[in-house]
Amino acid sequence: MTLQQLRDFVAVVAHGGYRPAARVLGVAQAGLTKSVARLEQEHGVVLLERTAKGVALSADGVEFLQHAQGLLLEADRAEAWLLAAAQPRGPRARHIELGVSIEPSLQLVPAVLADFHRMLPEVTLRLTEGVASALLAGVRENRIELAVTRLPADFEEGDLTVVPLFESESIVAARVGHPLAAAGPVAARALSGVGWVVVGDPTRPAFDDPSMRELFTARGLPLPAIAAVTDSLFAAVSMLVQSDDLARLPHVVLEHPLVVGRLCALPLREPASPRYTVAIVHKTARPLSREAHTLAAMLASFVRSRPGPLAR
Figure (spheres, rainbow, N blue to C red):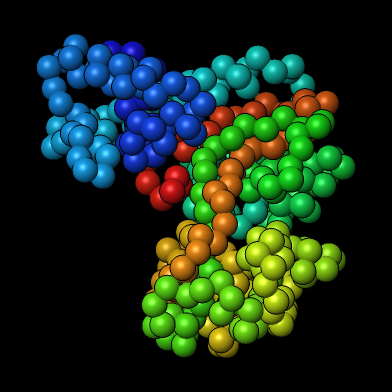
């Protein structure tokens, strides 16, 4: 048994099959299949069973997954320590300027912060939550050391170092009981007749937001009335639950305890948007502190070792 076999097994589970796992990891599907098959053959156990919908964990696979996740987490912690130790030794950072977009701020970052604080209790995280364009500008201008953010469709790395974490997608969110929610699959044209809350950069024109371009402009549809533009998730959710306005939000918003039962995803007749990537980003020319290296490694480790809602 090797760590790579464990990583391949967990990745297939996390992404729901060999093909999507290979696509996200950027490797050959055949290599993943052989790696997991070799793991099963070496130990005479079936971990994954093929079904009409792809693959599913066997009873042994469910139990083994917990052990695999634990081993990978410890291995990644050791790797994080080695990476940090390899950095030039200087004064320890007392804080990290961390930027987060909506999706990682809800699940990924909170899940890692407690563990990070136990490891480095003297380090304070200064969190900036915002839209991707603002966070990436903050990294380039040295106001943010590390960002965990959705990558815009027109993103160019340039002077930035990017570590992809997972793929995700947006939904059209509405309050529970919204008139369109019970109408069956909704045509995109019907969305033009409803007010919208744009979750984006308030300093830019609302109709220039990617959500508006993808849903309306690119399809030659009339633009809707814009009720508000905000970079605050709390403000957007508050407006949605008290109106018939709509908004494009990450799917994980619906799973947050403050939102469950209050917002829903509208069923759409046409696909709403392509999938997008959430990644760790920092400025290439600005060496990360040892503490920031440790945090970045822990974030990547959490994603690799934990199948579930982070990858859709």
